[in-house]
Length: 118
Image (cartoon, rainbow, N blue to C red; front, side):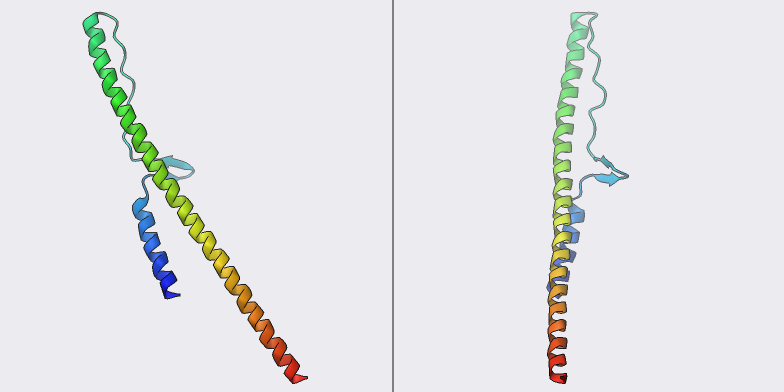
């Protein structure tokens, strides 16, 4: 039993460390930095267009970094949720099995005592 408690405590510590975003009131928020608004494309002159194209390239890089960050954090949080849920469900199943075994043992003991009393 102590081993199970220690394992649960270690798991809880790891779970908190693995959390990447925040889920509150049904809304998941990431800590990733969004790329901001898409810069406008200038069409006044070739020089202005080239300058705006550089800004667009910067935005694309920021958007790719944001996407990579979001995917990583979403996977990390999803993995924690699945692992935590599975651990909780396994504990309920194990506790239920232990309860059934204890109940069966108690009934067998009472049945044996009842036979001796007759």
